Length: 131
Image (cartoon, rainbow, N blue to C red; front, side):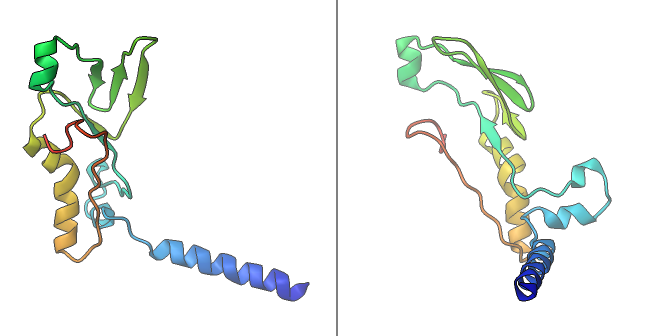
């Protein structure tokens, strides 16, 4: 039984030391000036509200998403509205450049310095991931 508890203890120590060594894509920024802009992030979730496409505009479809502030939005379907909070929300007026600057550029810069990084765009087919 002592061997079992020692193995668990060793495994816990290994897990703790391994987790201390893991650096998320933004970890480099967590060690500069210590300001709130330098917060260490492992994952950044950004929601972009896209403009209606020509088919939606021609059909007179309404926009069901209301941007509340730079981190939250409300979706109004046929039932009650639902609010969601993200790390950042890019409003309908946002440009491709603003999305890149906010979500991808820090990852690309870290990658060029030798850090691992991934930019993952998720959404329904035709939802505007490449808009």
